[in-house]
Each structure stands twice: as structure tokens, then as C-alpha cells.
Image (cartoon, rainbow, N blue to C red; front, side, top):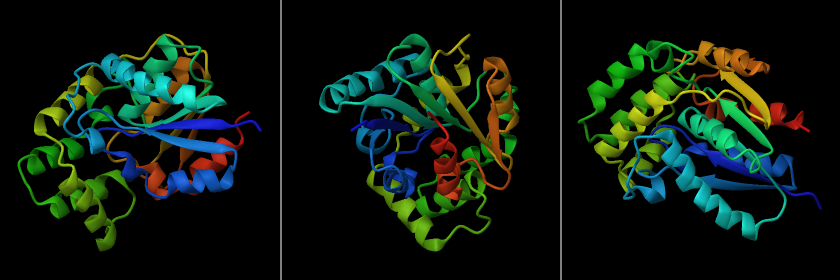
Length: 249
């Protein structure tokens, strides 16, 4: 049996549980698939771990986890990553080209290709400044969901669920700032040897979809655009992502 292992990497200040139903749906659609979560230091189960100020350091830490998984799970290995996670994925596949067969990027960006206000919108920055010192997790998650998804009025149950994640694993402000700094400094590598699929959302209010278009031009690969979803594409339309993955060899 040919097993495909997918490494899922989230973005800024988000943990494994924020993937929602996407991982289960992916495994249901592809029975020979095994999903693994790699969390950034400073979030989720690693909330007390020290964050880094360079994307390369996140890559190397996550790769150490992967090397342990690789010994336990046979088969080929792919990465599906969103936003800052995509930056880690690009760095990983560039510096360790033999590790990963396919990289799927979702709404990612690079500092040497796109303008700062395209990579992190003024609307998103205003939200961060407004909520940075607030401890009301439901208020914080409501604002985050409004800017990262196409859901204009986020469901109260979803807000409460996400607020409970923040309450259980509250990210330290220094970790958040280090992650932002690392993402802001990321420069895209010259080339990637792995198979590359680039997905982006037209209605992304956090990172303009033109950032993904710039990545596609840089690597001379196709970008597939979702017309109605927001930045958190796995939350808005997980089925659509799975449909795009199906076409991969």
C-alpha cells in the first residue's frame, strides 16, 4: 500500500486544532493518507516553548520532529501549509530538497516579492494593535475570524470553541511578536525542486492574493484562486482544497 504522509503547518499564532474538520475530511477522501501536525514553538502544545525570530529556525525545529516521525511512518511525505507555515514550507523544501515530494501553499507571501501592506493589511494591523493587550478571548477571536474568514458574522459556537483554545494555551506576547518578526523578514528562495501547488483566496483580507500570484510568477508555477474564501481557506472551504490536491500525482 502506497502511503502518503501530509505534514500540516499553520500560520501566525494558530495551533493544530485551528485546522478544524479539514484533516479528517482529507483522510476520509484519501484512505491511504496519514495527517501529522507540526505546531510552531509558542503556540498550542508548545505554548511554553521559545519562539524564534528567523523562519530558518522554525524550519529546523519542525524538521527535527519530522525526522522522528519519518522513522515511524513509511511512505512519501508532503507539506500543506498556510500563511507563515507556507514560508517555513518553502524554506524547508529549498534547504532540504530530498525531504518533501509536494508542497501545497495556501495564502502565503514573501518579503522580497510583495509590499508590506499586501503581506499584512492595514486592517489586520489595526486589529492587532487594538486587541494586543486585551484578555477577552471571545472578543479577540471574533475580530480574528472576521478578518481571516469570509464569514461576516462568525458563528457563536465557533467563537467560543476558538476562545477556549486561546484560554487553554494563551500565546505569550513575546512569542507573537517573534513570529511576526520572523514572517516579516522571510525572503523567498530562488528555486524549489519539489512539486508545488499554490492556492490563494481572492477575498483574503489579511494577505492580498497578489502575494500568491507573485510567488507563482517567481517559481513559474500555476496559482489556483478561490473566488469567495478568506485567508483561512481550510476553514472556509476545506472541500475545495481537497479537490485541488486530488489532481496531484
